[in-house]
Length: 206
Image (cartoon, rainbow, N blue to C red; front, side, top):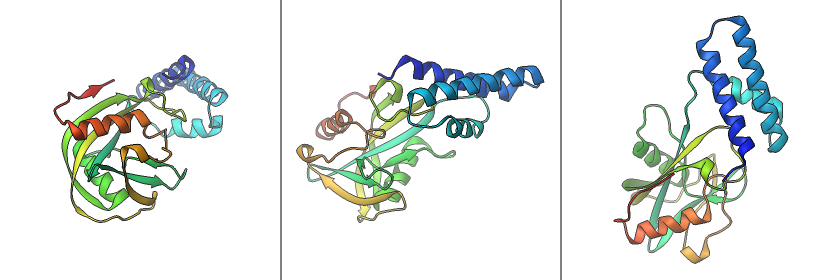
């Protein structure tokens, strides 16, 4: 679980974003900008980003504030799981990323897997819908995020890196490399192996 101050800061940022979208009174606009400033100060004081970076991030968000969606694909071959090595931190993760507008969650994960790994897949099981805030991901993330995990079957393609990935490999459950834990946790990888062995398991949530 993440610290309460981070939850409070995210909620303040969301209130500010929604308020700035709907109000047209300049006094109210000033108040919502002040709330956004407080949220950025809180996150900067306890996190890894500077206040000016956070304010820039917040200023690019518009409309009513809702959680963002991250999709991850768990694809297997001969009892090994497909992982990609992230360029930004040199650590490993399930292929995936933010869902694009216009994509369904399953379409988004199929696109992300082929883009990041070179493998074509089809989704076979919705394994989990996790609230990132309720799991010990590091580092912290400035927005509320839902993480959707799919079991995938490889249908074609071959290993290929991308602008975001430096390596593509399969790993046995007892040989998982250091993970990019902002993206995926060891217990989530373990859970994907359980779904691979028994797809009849119910979908996890929260």
